[in-house]
Length: 139
Image 1 (tube, rainbow, N blue to C red):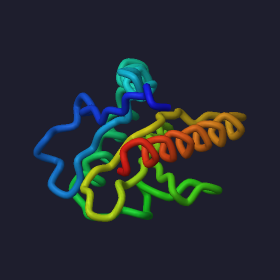
Image 2 (image 1 turned 180 degrees about the vertical axis):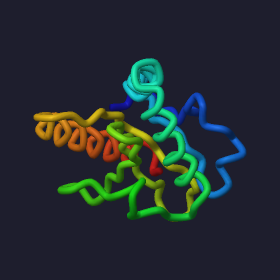
Image 3 (image 1 turned 120 degrees about the vertical axis):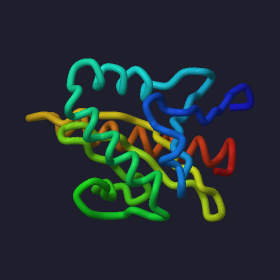
């Protein structure tokens, strides 16, 4: 993976003043990320859910560790990946290693009836991206 370029890119609509405890970024590999496309679709198609997801992002940005509750939880079957909730929308992320203040968002997902298998696939893909990110950057 020597040619792989990993970047941590600011998420549109996340206000810098929210980031008092964590810097919220999405993972881009070689300049591309599905998170950006998915969040734009969410914003256009489900604006109320998107605003609710932004509130969850704000809570994570402002607090040292959010690990449970209504808005954030660990993913079932993958303890290293957490999800921020916004009604039916999910944003999968992981905290940077100890000593870093970054939250890395790696996948976005919309829940729906009969989509449990797709959700598990999204969580598995998020874990693969976390592993790649840690290997390539140490974050």
